[in-house]
Each structure stands twice: as structure tokens, then as C-alpha cells.
Amino acid sequence: GCIIQVINPNTSRSMTETIAVAARSVAAPGTEILAVCPQEGVPSIEGHFDEAIAAIGVLQQVKLGREAGVSGHVIACFGDPGLLAARELANRPVIGIAEAAMHMATLVATRFSIVTTLPRTLVIARHLLHQYGFERHCAALHAIDLPVLALEDGSGLAQQKVREHCIQAKQQDGSGAIVLGCGGMADLARELTQELGIPVIDGVSAAVKMIESLHALGLNTSKHGDLAFPQAKPLSGMFGGFNR
Ligand SMILES: NC(=O)NC1=NC(=O)NC1=O
Image 1 (cartoon, rainbow, N blue to C red):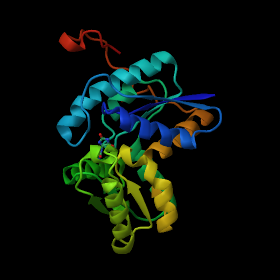
Image 2: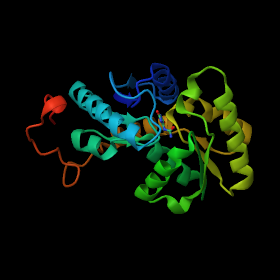
Image 3: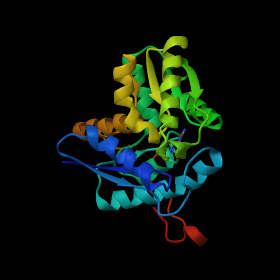
Image 4: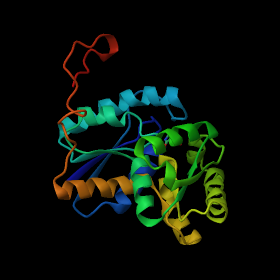
């Protein structure tokens, strides 16, 4: 069996649950999902500062998962915070939900649109498109202009905004697929795919299936070269107990 650690890098328990439900909804019968979030950090991730803080919690959770013997790790925030650092700490595969959703979109469409939360997170999505080499595949990026935690306030307003922007993206962007740009949107993909008649892709479920595939293929993070374990060195202060 496969044990997948799904890390919500923010500290909001309700979003961790939304993410866990999406992960479990696609997990294979033999796959166990361990959904976690950092004990301390930031309640939502909406910019570079938040990402820097969240990355420490991601690394702490990846180390715990490695020591628990998980088969792989998912970073369930659309900025993929701490992804490469996490791969240095991990033996097993580590996949971010943005890279997972973007890869899947390129398999089913020639171009995709992204629908994310606050406008200020658009630059983060653009950085990832460049980093992953998908700039040419992304036709447009949209922001619903609501904060991440509006997805968890029970009003349904954020979910309605996501739906409206997905409809606009389908009509205006010339995209064949849509990528949902937040871990908290993970529960919307299936219904929107049905309603819009085009692939609307959630990175949480995409990442879970990619980890299962890597596990089945016996492929793990390469420790040869750039992603080798960090050099052992004396870490000080709050990082004291935190070595590779
Ligand atoms: N673009 C985003 O909304 N990123 C995110 N911030 C979070 O706290 N979770 C996300 O997925």
C-alpha cells in the first residue's frame, strides 16, 4: 500500500479537511492519506511573506513524514511553497498542487486558464509557470479577488465567484481546460467539470494520483546532485533542533 502525506501549508484546520476530503475521494483502495498542517505559522498564504513562513512548516512536516515512512508528500498550496527545499529533505517524491494541476492540464488541452484567489497571488502563479516551463500553455490567469479563507466561511460566495470566473475563462480565453488555483478549491473541480463540459482541474487530487504513479513505477526524488540531502551544519536558535 501507499501512504501519502498531504500537507496543507497554512494552519487552517477547515481547509486541511477540505483538502483531505478531495485527496481521499481519488485515492486508490490501497492508498492511505495522512492530512497534516503545521502547528504554527500562517492561517492562509496570500503572498511571498506568507510563503516564506509556511515553507518552514512544510519542511518540518516533510521531515516528520519521512521519519514515519510515507510513500510521498503533497504540498497542498497553489504556490508550492518550499517545494525544492522539501525535495532535498525527502527520500520519496514531493509534488506541489500547482505543478500537478498544470501538468495534468497540458495532457488534456493545448492551453489552460488559472482561476485563483487574491490578485496579488497572480504573480506567484506566473513565477511557477516560468519555473515549470508552462508559460506558453497558460492562456490567462484570473483572480476572484477574495481572500483564501473566504472559501471556508460557509457563505458560498467564493465558490460562486470561482464558478463565474471559470465560465468567463471558458468563453473568453481560448483555453481547453481550467486549473483551480487554491487548495481550498479542491472540492469544486468535479462539479465544475460536469457543469462547464471542460476539464476543471484540482491540484490536490492530481498530485495524489501522480504520487501513486511514481510509487508504482518505483521512482523517488533523485538524491544525486541538486536535490541531495542538505549539508549537515550547526543550525542556531529556532532552527536548532531542525537538521536534515
Ligand atoms: N493562490 C492561493 O490561494 N494559494 C493558497 N493559499 C493558501 O493558503 N492555500 C492555497 O492554495
